[in-house]
Length: 418
Image (cartoon, rainbow, N blue to C red; front, side, top):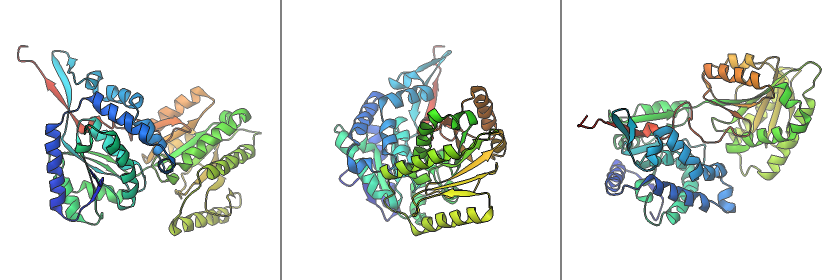
């Protein structure tokens, strides 16, 4: 794999890539232990200033570790999957087998998503045919170069084919869909709907991760605790900074529970300091004119629409805090723009969720209230409920489904002697 990403221009090239993957899949059967060993080496190689500057690499290194992945495999596929053994199921036996060639369509706004997606398929024993969005070709090459260097025995590299072409090339999209046995699809509403309509084989398994948004919440006991304010604000800032707030797991709004006699001014000041610190540590390298305009418009509209609204932001578009009240989810702005809304009862905004909220990040001093809130959130369609500071941690279930099991076949064997 001298060039990790191949620029393709014809359906025949994609079909040939899939044929080669099937051949390598049939000839090479690495054990789960061998796969995990390569991933562990890959994680260790993702170091250096250039790689550390890629958004999400810190989480990618954690995801690839054996200590992260072994529990995931055991939970989704059973302990026997680590050794390739059958799992006893009464008089029968169960064992996971790969579906074959898995096609991956990652979104173009998360730098590490092509890698995260393909690792899920590889953990199920599959080959990976990955369409790399044009804006992620360079970063994917740099990340994959480290795998090529680590995989000296050819355990995984022969099972991976990365192709790049314009999303408007319907002929290439269709050729890729016809060539796979399963698909992992990520992205916005339009992209997901278009990809779902591709001519996949009737036996193909599809795992779809569509567009959603995420929310943060704190009860009064948490945000008013001056001894813990700085730590909580640092966690919030990190969740906002990752992926420039473009990920589905990025908090777009922070709801604060009111308490009589307590002002949120001190907490907001602590959050402002945390945003300043995070911006110095991880400054934005570039910003599109479109996003700059959206941020400026959001700031102006927020202040003009209601005289009780407040806003804190630097001279540039680096980050923005928009303060007010109300339980309605505001329209996401992204670009490190966080709405801070005070509510009398945290159950009020959760009750209005309509299934579009993926992750709920919590900081709660009242454990009983958190348990009640988590149950209500689950009933209202939230799939992940985590501590603030961990909203992006890539651990299944994700969007309410497993990450490895959808791309395996659980084969049931009833011995003929029974």
